[in-house]
Image (cartoon, rainbow, N blue to C red):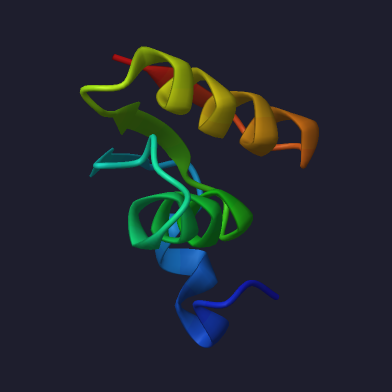
Length: 68
């Protein structure tokens, strides 16, 4: 079970766009929570380096993610 608890089934097979996901703060934490719940995450950020790192972390944890 992810940090979203009993909401996990709602996010299975969905796509979630998370803005500000390239930093090390709330955006990345939100991206991780949605990914752990089964959602494909589209990480958006002004920082390509940070956004790509977030995607790498999500994929290493077994999630699907893309950076835009």
